[in-house]
Length: 174
Image 1 (cartoon, rainbow, N blue to C red):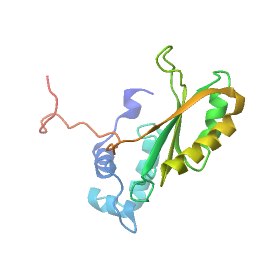
Image 2 (cartoon, helix red, strand yellow):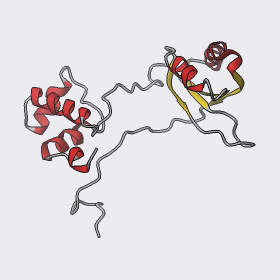
Image 3 (tube, rainbow, N blue to C red):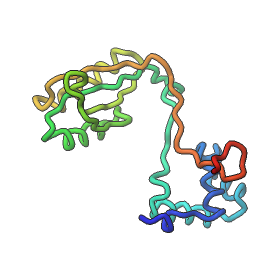
Image 4 (cartoon, rainbow, N blue to C red):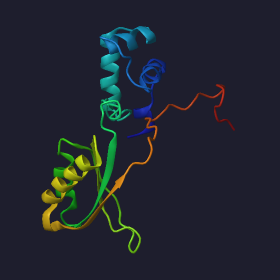
């Protein structure tokens, strides 16, 4: 996609700025964004759809705070899965209702043998270990080794933030 196809106008930018930290907590969040930007809710939704269709934004999704939901034990399960089957098995692991994200990563021979990662959350370590066992059963003999890495601290997660425009405080300039 060319840069012209990805370019945004001032209204698109205002919508992105209004939503980049999350949608407003309101009964009608898109109406709140529209009011902030100064356009109708219908236009806001249409512009978001166009931005999505053009690849400017990939998705609009929910990112719950699992700690506030009582899921305070987090384990990144890591798996050494047969390369010929890792994509298909990864799809199945990612579809499990307790896996929040699942992805393939390259191995680093003699340092890190794992190529499939799946995050599982629970109220206790034991709950996460039970979930890990369910993944192991699904992977079966295609899995040669595994481990689980438990979180030791909460990391702040944020999405992409728009760069400041030239002339704005903190903006890069030549």
